[in-house]
Length: 109
View 1 (cartoon, helix red, strand yellow):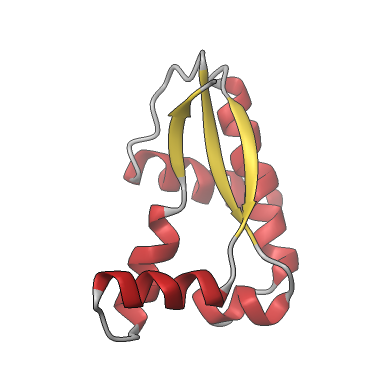
View 2 (view 1 turned 120 degrees about the vertical axis):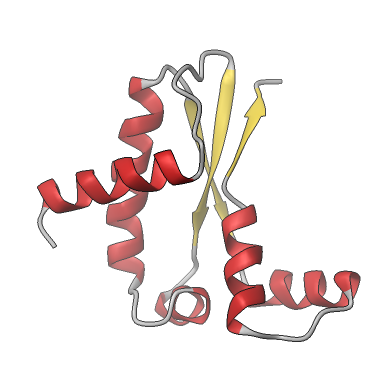
């Protein structure tokens, strides 16, 4: 995937996740990982390098919409704690639901 394809992918992702056009006064939490294993746990086949490229491109979208970005490191242990709290089994769908819920818009404090 080249940068042009990545930019199109990120714009589509932003639209799919209803990222507001105006993020002034907001911060956007973005997922980061400690290593390739943690990245692959949530996104099979994706490396930390490709996740970082996605995050950099997404940060550009957020900045163009006048928002700030915050990277949040997510681990499988956090996911397992979430599973226990929610009383859910481990599954590909639950991993996807958990990790996608970590991307979110918040008011600046």
